[in-house]
Length: 294
Ligand code: G1P
Image 1 (cartoon, protein in one colour):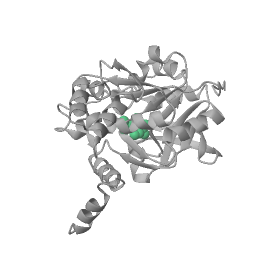
Image 2 (tube, helix red, strand yellow; image 1 turned 30 degrees about the vertical axis):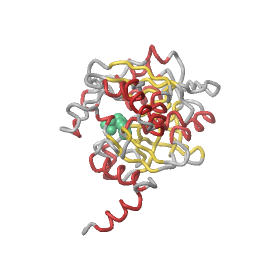
Image 3 (tube, helix red, strand yellow; image 1 turned 90 degrees about the vertical axis):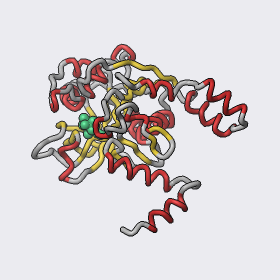
Image 4 (cartoon, protein in one colour; image 1 turned 135 degrees about the horizontal axis):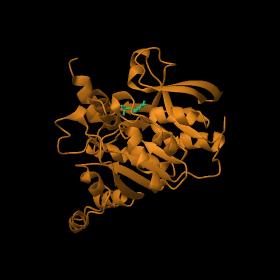
């Protein structure tokens, strides 16, 4: 096995695939991108962008598609709104708006056809420039002391190679995830021996891939060689299986709570959990929840 390490190359770029139709949230997502649904008072995608920034990433590449311009507007400067807030003396809100648009550097590219997660990542090749990079799937919201991506970068700095975020899931849930077979090589770190996308039967373990990845640029060659898989789409997990033949891949069992905000129940749970952390809402919400006759 040829193992290529990139321990000296700092990870600066993060890819955010955001071209999906959000069918699980219809009709809410008919005219609004799923990524803009509010979690308490911030759009979903902003949580992962903040995680990227807190992990030291500087360049965010968002892969968008038809009907997604609200995402670009959200991270842009809103001149008229800023003037209005200034005139009305709403300085706190003004600085909140400016924080959003000054957060990091954003670029956008469009996925013209819905050919899957692997395809969405493949089209960023020319923007990545032969360096390792991070990927965030914005449906996965991770609440943790140390940002999940920061924990993964620490694994990358130590081991090199690609790094996948993983978490144990119930045996009944393995068919919903990419599942790895791993060998423990450190505290919460595994070397990946095999991986399979959404196994119908006989999953290789209960370790599920969660939507955070660090990928070496060799993934692009592997993606080119990947045939359509589950659902007729180019699957990232299938490309990683090809990459594994050439390079070591590691898995980081991050510390933190993950919410599947791409699922209606997970979205509601995330809203309640994040609202309960907010000093301005916590007590009233607790009182409301306790008063529910369940
Ligand atoms: C994608 C990946 C899957 C991974 C999951 C994490 O699936 O294909 O391997 O486990 O994200 O959220 P999706 O949920 O987009 O169908």
